[in-house]
Image (tube, rainbow, N blue to C red):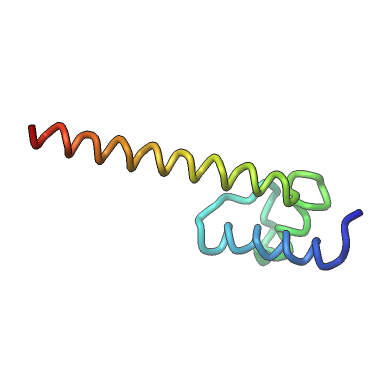
Length: 79
């Protein structure tokens, strides 16, 4: 069961992604603020806490892989 608090937390997290993280909205913006867009995404079933967790993990893994690749390239360049 999703509580109002869960809804608020997911909407705030998603709004922050769009506002600060540069993430594109999954619904038409229609001159709405990011919080309204986030709530519409949730309403349409496009976003929930699990989806955000999976996306965050994927982005973290991609970032770590890129960092490892950069460190490896630097280390190989020193040989």
